[in-house]
Length: 368
Image (tube, rainbow, N blue to C red; front, side):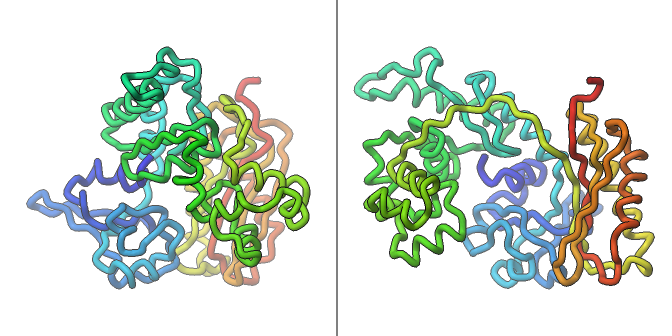
């Protein structure tokens, strides 16, 4: 999906279309409806706090704001950008809608999160057909039908990469954003894939990217030119072979059409560091809210769990976790809250808190 969270917000606030908009920060940044029916929006100018941009519209990205950027830094680059709080309930609603729209056309889907999926088109009627002089006209038409159906059912745009495998499709889906349809075969590697930076391959992270750059390898084409034995010598047998395969567009992974979550969690970062004693009521209220949200998530998805965990990050950025395993699985807020309270008793609160989270693991389907 294209700038998914931001695009959902633009459906709600169409007057912001075309403007730089950043999603992040706390609920205090909610728009205010004025007596004449117009809305007043918060702006990044003058923002103070430790909030982080969850996403941004393409207009905001054009001036250098991107996801994961601190909002104070973003304010220096785009002071006039509109700031909106995140609304995950709304994003999950549109996530379900866009996936249902895709499934109406192509039901073989691997879910990759709230805004991304893989789709296997191989066996769909017409996918292998030529149309006129286009040998891939059939599959191109199906991909366009998917995009049209998503737009019709949600009002949102998506970008589709159609290739022989998952690795290339991941890359291709980013090449012509927003609202793009990119079809690539192995014959297109040299012109469309090899000029790209190595980090565009999903699976090459910051450390591997830095090591490759130190070795003089910056593009996927330069990686493809390396001997397999040389890569194995520098990166080990498994990862070295994978780097060689990835650079040449080789990927034999099939779709995983069903998976069970390992855990579910909710967490929040505070606008200011909180003291365990002086801010006790605020911390307690925050934990209550997180627990209720987690219980709703579990119940909505039909899960219960036995292991309740808490996550704390202090002002020195040290992160502490504590877990408690219950006798029986639960998805009830009261039981989760009691267990979280027991976990908190095992923590040293000599430093102020910047983040609080609660998690449920050892999941199973409720009623089993």
